[in-house]
Structure formats: structure tokens, C-alpha cells
Length: 359
Image 1 (cartoon, one colour):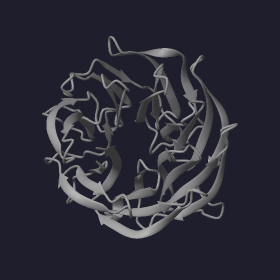
Image 2 (cartoon, rainbow, N blue to C red; image 1 turned 45 degrees about the vertical axis):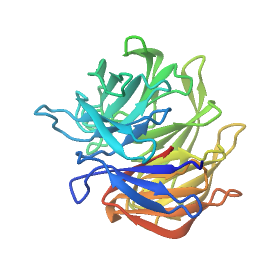
Image 3 (tube, rainbow, N blue to C red; image 1 turned 180 degrees about the vertical axis):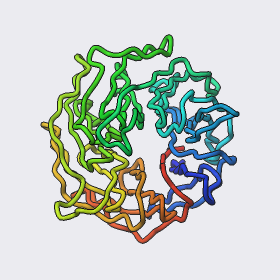
Image 4 (tube, one colour; image 1 turned 90 degrees about the vertical axis):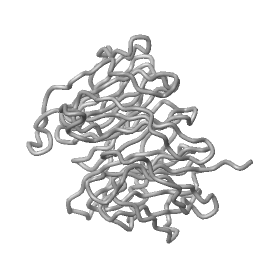
């Protein structure tokens, strides 16, 4: 029996969007066939799927939830035959505008980054996939030199390290990665022995990704349009800076805001998205020292690529162009990592996250 590749597309619902859009991927040409849409949910802007592919968790990137000043997280059960979603429950995040969500390997806890106040929330998860009330809420303090965007803390990403020893919270507002010890028994966070990784002032760090080797981590900076490479030490819980490298061609002088960052399944190439330049920056990864080399910037054939994703086979690349309501399909050339448009475009209102499940 052949596996079914299902793509879940998160959206902003202030316009025409209804929620999370569900597609089956054509393994031959990368096309996406619409299977259905979740129940109407407000601003499901980022998702994560558990390792057993039983549940999908999403943020609800809102300022108010059930009458309180908070966003929310919601759980959906995945139908293994159809790929469709069934709502399980939701919980307030105790912070406004949650914009990123992640999960541990066992599926026992989820984590949310709340942009508005720089709040990190931790939630235990029941065996039936339902989310419990937050077990820990931590608010970052501080600001950065960019008065418009860094007037206070703005958490934008949260993830456990590959060894699950630490939780990393990337904060755009204070130019830092905050590093916590995570206790899976209590669901609590405590500052680690090396609790902060400082980034160049005004960089506005947004998302990060760990290399498959577990030795390197890469951070994309929204405001300075560059990527920082780090060597990660699991023993010490430290991130030692290796390199800063721009995501833009040297001749470009226009406005740009970086967004997503991902690594190819084979660990050879790193990709970062540029909003403004509207391109994907493609880097070669030196697996010996972790350094990056910019090899191309490829237009996304749309406006404002907030997210992108590589399918699980590593053959196709999907650019989610938020402001042109489109997902553009590219083929990945394995010998170079370069992406080429296939000509396929999927019309989706305000797509801002793509996650794949293999059923």
C-alpha cells in the first residue's frame, strides 16, 4: 500500500480563508489536490504534527480568546485514512498573538511562542491528544534598538534541542535566544546554566533550525536579513557563533524581512525566505564546520513568502506566498539544491504555514 502525503496549510482568516486547508500531494509532479478544510478557526498561523501522526496542533494567533486577552492553541485528530481533521479541544496560551508551536518527541507536551508580550507557554497533552491548561508561562523582558519592532520582547519561535535537554525560545524583540531546562515530569521551565545567546543588536531573530547531525544550529534574522550559524554543544548547552551570512544578493538595497528557515532532508542545503526581495536564499552547508555558502536566490513567483516547506521525499519545494494567496511548487535539483518552478500554483487565501504528514 502506497503512502499518502498530506499537506496542511495554515492561514490568516481575516480575509477569505476559513481555517487549515488540507491537500494530498501528487508524488510524481508535486501537485496538491484539495481534500478539505478544518472547521472554521481563527488565524491558525502555525502548526505542528506529533511523531505518531495522530494529532495536529495549531496556534490561534489572536488577541482575544473566550473573552480574555490571550491567544490559544488547538488540537485536531488526524483521520489516518482521509487526512481530514477533527477538532479535539483548545486552551488559552496566557499570552497574545501566539505565532509558533512545537512538540516534544513523545508527544507529552507542546510549546507556544506568544509574540505580543514575549511569553512562552508549556502545555501537557493527554493520551487522547487533548491539551491541558498551561503548566508553565514565562514572560521575557527587555527591548532592542529598533524602536518600531523591538520596543519590548516578542517571542517568535520555540523548540527543544535535538537531544531534548533544553528548550530554545527565539525572541525578536530582545535579540536573544533564551535557553531553558525543561522538566517533562512537571512541565516546567527553568533558566539553563547558559540562559541567553545574544545576537547582534537590531537583528530581530525569528526562527531557527538544527542540523540533522545535532552539531549545528542556524538562526534567521528578520530585521537584518541574515543567518547566524552556531556550533551547538549538548554537554554544555552552549551555542558558539560560527558565521553571519546575508540572505540577499549584494546589489539589493530594498526593504526585506526574513521569515522561514529549513534544511533539506539530506542535510546538504539550507533555505531561507526573503519577504520584500520575495525569494528563497539557498546555501550549501559544510558538514565539517557548519559554515554556509550562498549559492543562489530564486524568486518565489509570488508576494511575501512567509513560509515554505520541503516534502518528506526531498523532491519538491513549496513556497507559501502570503500576500498573493498562492503556494508555488518547485522541483529540487538534488545535485545542486537549486529549486526550479514546476509551473504548478495552488490558490490558497493567505497561506502562512505548510506541514506534511505521511499517512
